[in-house]
Length: 448
Length: 125
Image (tube, one colour):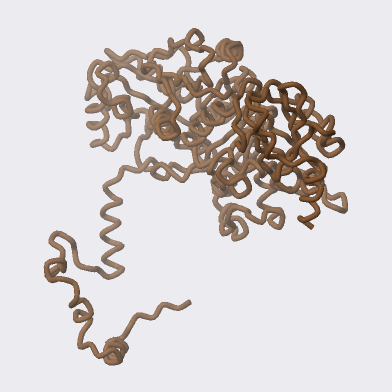
């Protein structure tokens, strides 16, 4: 369809047909008091394309973008190198323009890559079955709690103080409107929390994060046993999926549901989205799992093919009795994840994880050597927490003015808690270089 | 089977003492096709007549099963987890769903007997 703007002649002819003298006359029935007398004060007039482009370039220049400055920000979203192959692949028309398959079996290509994605997620998390993806890690965490409530027929979730505060907020929001309880532990910067003793016969699930929001790497094997003894499920959240290249997968710890933010693989930071949620569980719980699930089968001629399976869990079939109101998935982001992980391979993925940990270890050593700075972690992957001799937020602001993005002050995500005011989260991925680390250390020396 | 009653939703209930065993009829299993999963209620759950309390899933559809009478679930057919096909093979036998302790046997008087149910099925064409 072409878009042709009206010419003055068109407009005059149309007004002539209905007998109006001007466009303004069409609004004469609207009381004068409800009409704007002229331009809206403070709002700029319309602009030409070149002027609009200039204006937005000026707005954009106010951002300090990760690729143009020393960058040590993490806290749930991580800057990694995404090979250009990924972008090329996902921009192929067959992938880019296809919507979630509602007539699934005619879109074998889509089903096949989702099947590969599920296989990768199962292997990474050490779980038996994974779905075709969720919107992001936080909503996947909330869905995991709902699923645990269905499986256990209980309604009390225990939330670790090591869980990302935004994830906790999403779970609490859902809990409020769905009428179950979510009991959150206090923020746990030291990584000392043990929820085993708090699990009781009313607990549907315990939600923990690994590495924790503060960066601690944990083994939840004992907690899993405590959960199972009480008939509760253990939900493990992973916000930095690259960590699974080095850390024991949650499945081996006895987790019942594992959810991850998959952004780190294949997907850019993009101001917070779109991202991709990973969701995996045990075979025995598959009927309570939310989301789409692709299965492998054979067609009438015995050839390999793919189907959407166990769809009776889904809303387009079970309506209000569905396990979830998610009817779709983050298809393109899941594809980017699959392409990137495929390019890395098992060995490459492990090496990427090792490189991340090496960079973060170097950063931790250098930051902790600064006067008055204390590293809170005994263990970490690519992110850790330091305690500064003064509040962290103004330090980060001062460095941002020097175009150094020096991590996330914990107070930004946990406001109104003076005990975390001096805490700073620092992340270093494979993208960290001396040209970034040097200025960060020098900058910290100056402002501390 | 004079003690077996039927509902218009194609459930049957067979009463022995104050316990009723509930399943779906031959007609229902034929309409559903191959049953692949049955979600049965837990023991101890209180169900009200007409309440959806189980789900039967076939290759064609997922359907709710309604309690034909009010009572408390005393047993669910654990065998269906491993062999849901029992519902197709023996809908009135091995393929039963769950048992309830009836609160009021009088509720059953509104249900159909076998002859009435067979006549009802014939009207469905």
